[in-house]
Image 1 (tube, rainbow, N blue to C red):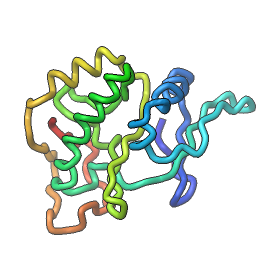
Image 2: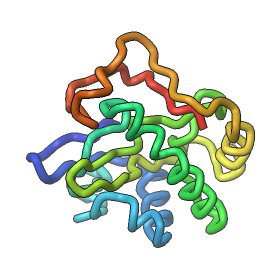
Image 3: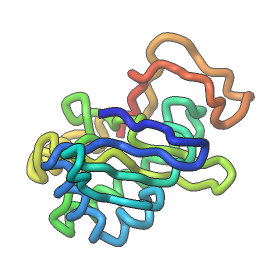
Length: 171
């Protein structure tokens, strides 16, 4: 399910039962807490039988940012995944495209804080799958592939305008 904005500061996501339990587990990791926007509520609504994640709305997805910002995220993403895997936890949707890239929609950059956030944990795959994808992606291609329109690199670091969501950061 997509993330829905409640206002300019708060958003929410409806989670499957598996993803709800996965979030409870991964939020016990200090790096996840540090790199995830502040979780205001994670709860099951008995009335609607839905699971909700309510969090602060931070930054913009990397696919809306310049190549400079995207490339600076590479080292962070490597160390973040290594830390998660050491703790036997996984993201579920950060490594993609057969292991050669990162889902840029799940990494946010806050230009005012100069900080990267990682969001949208789920149960697609498993720890073993993600470790394998991570291992085959390292050193695969050091650059960013931009499909379709080019960004003006002299413009804002994060334009806020929607660029193609199929941009992929190759690790």
